[in-house]
Length: 321
Picture 1 (spheres, rainbow, N blue to C red):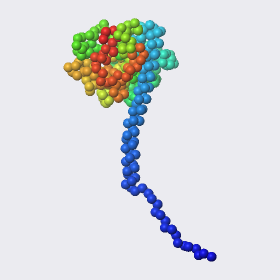
Picture 2 (picture 1 turned 180 degrees about the vertical axis):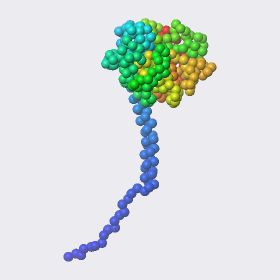
Picture 3 (picture 1 turned 30 degrees about the vertical axis):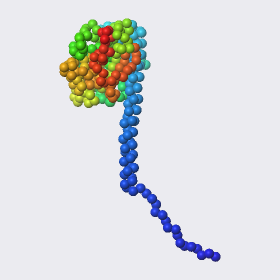
Picture 4 (picture 1 turned 90 degrees about the vertical axis):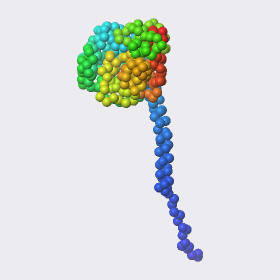
């Protein structure tokens, strides 16, 4: 019988990561995350931008349907009787589109026999409507009060007004835009786009072409005031309070690059038309520009460095520019 061999093979030491190796792996992962994060953010912004464009396309279709029914586009804001506003109250263009954006229930709650700030209308104005919001816009401060803007008195609201990021462009300010041109072009007869105060404009009035005339722009973040990408603490716009506000539309006048001065002409540096400020200028939170809705219903992204005279030409419907 063979004797048992009690000799044992040596046990091999189990391998493992050293601290230095672990730190190297962590550093590599951090670098990869740093490289991927901007790409992920870019993809997300592209999706938000596409959603914002779809909102504008829906609004374009709603405005076309309104024009089919009434023979004219809604005014940017009514202060007298007109299509869709037989009572002659202060009412904006967005409440008039409610039946055409699948918001007929909200439309039935809105009282067109009263101004937008009267009766139960402020309660209706607190209802958020997704198609009026661009997903790229950061969440802002709730609107629970408003300074007076006659005939609307100073107000407090039981429920915060629901915001909007899209506004009608009424046209251009001749005194601000003409100095940028070789010769004055704009005056009281040709300064408007299709939607301005108490307007009754239809397709036939767009002499400069429906595919080259803007009717709605992004003007996001209001009534808080933004200069470039920074909100100005304590500064609050008296218009653009929410989707029901009839005083939000504006005319293009140009701003300085920092957004703090408007309508000062080329001598004062007011040559920026997009994304300098949301204080009465087209403004979006998309990198590099903003979305515009044209009269023919198409939506286009306009670069922020677009020359102000070019933007002005797009904001008028019959200036021959």
